[in-house]
Length: 204
View 1 (tube, helix red, strand yellow):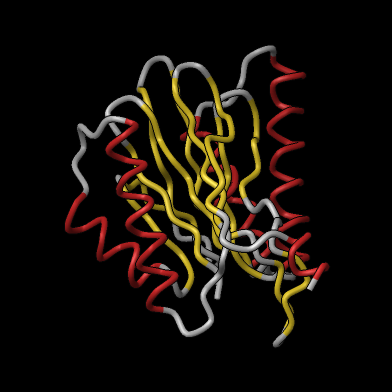
View 2 (cartoon, helix red, strand yellow):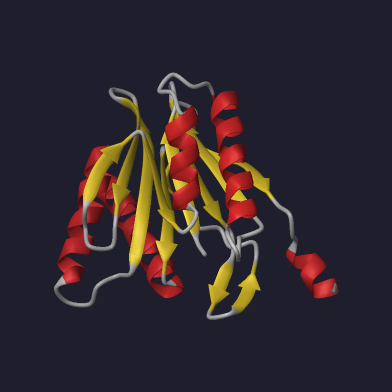
């Protein structure tokens, strides 16, 4: 029951993901970080098969770093999105990755941006996006309350509404979520929304 969603605000972008590592009917952990920091100003939130998600996001992260090392300048968010889409498209004909991606970044020239990339290599630039079962509720809430000129506080309030809706509507809802933000000051973790901690599960 994965849930990954994101949105673009006035001068920032936010990506939110559940933190449950699940296989079949078992929950292995509830603090899995599914949002990778690609570089100083890019975030990649991913959902899908655990192995594909971990391997592919790390592969993209290292290639973005390699490009900057070779050329002395970082890839733009748009270039990173197109590179990611190209790698998924190439793999699609060989050994496809079952991974869906929300890529957020901030560029000095163009400001914040958000890209939706699915497992069959479709690429769209959007103001708001979501993947997983939680997308049914996150997209509904964002359609109703989203505005392009939202402040960080307003966006976090909307994110919290989406999380509450996902937790209350899904039969098997993920308990914990991680929120990350990217703006002119860089990409960073903003907050966690936790209703279960791994320590509590172990103690029980």
